[in-house]
Image 1 (cartoon, rainbow, N blue to C red):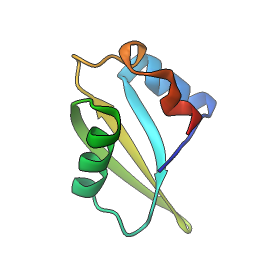
Image 2 (image 1 turned 90 degrees about the vertical axis):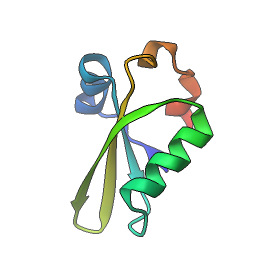
Image 3 (image 1 turned 135 degrees about the vertical axis):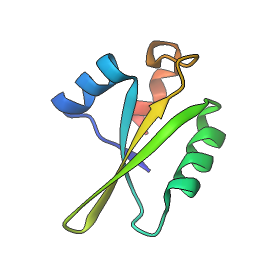
Image 4 (image 1 turned 90 degrees about the horizontal axis):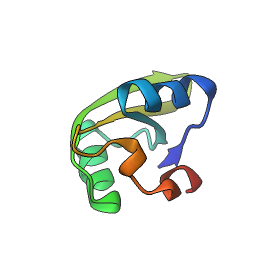
Length: 78
């Protein structure tokens, strides 16, 4: 999983508490949710998938109990 840090992705973090990651094309929503929750010890409300060309992106909406400001900053530095 590789974090996406674009202007749109940062706006989604601030407004919707949603993180965007580039993920392996073979991963499904359940695998992404379990891996992310295990790695960062957060609760996830929803995972949305976007496939463009040869890349697959996951938009991960964190639970309201886990605002991004409370989430470790190293998520963006993976």
